[in-house]
Length: 325
Image 1: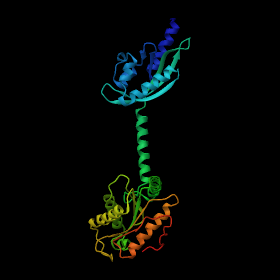
Image 2: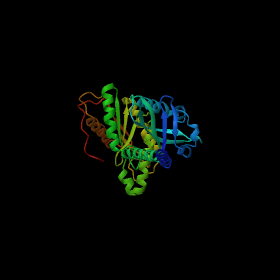
Image 3: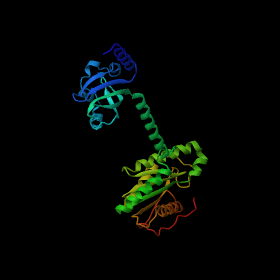
Image 4: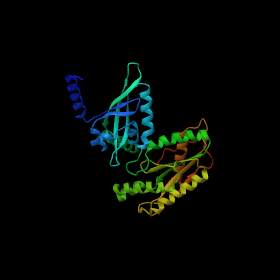
């Protein structure tokens, strides 16, 4: 090697080893490291000399990433395709650091793979930021479907769940039950105790209703104002009636004083309960309106009670009464 070439090589090496990216080279035939930058030691704690073969690279990878990353890199390299891979690399201290490997495939004069050269980048901070953004996105999605006051699902989520469970019931021909309920004389409660205590009351009712159901697909949501709704998949009329009574008793157990109620000295609820095996021409809105009418009847007939449809509703369901007590 000429003096000029040696000087250039030394300059290039100095430049490579002064960057935060970690350069490396693997001989394809022997699968051994021809070179790896000294920065690897400060990043992962393993000495430069300990990186002998591709086995060391694979062994120092998180077990959950190893098969996927190694298989991908070998496949791409065999096909002569430059590629990138993200994975968690094991440190000498036993921790993991997120690495991005950027790989270039070098071919010989015959077009065969000769070697792999590339750079390792520490992307831990980037991954941390990505995870924080994903967590934030998930929280925002949850908030968009959750009632901010009571903590149960909101009307938007109810609309989504009802549409989904309606379609499931149509396919399976299993009964779907719906409970609409209203806090009795809630306006008088708010006027007497104030809106702050009124908000606490709504939270307590939401918690009580959540205790009344126990299956993963059972849904509890705030329908609006002082109204709540339950969607009960694969629940027949008898079971829905039982759950409605459990809702009423759970609210009673809260023992929320209501001095301005014409029904009881304790807070009570009225409920409408409907069950349907939806046919092809039935509509969720018609079913919802029929249950709303039952809720209205429960309030007209004395409150603190449930009105249950006597027979499965079909496409001839009556519309709901517009009046609200």
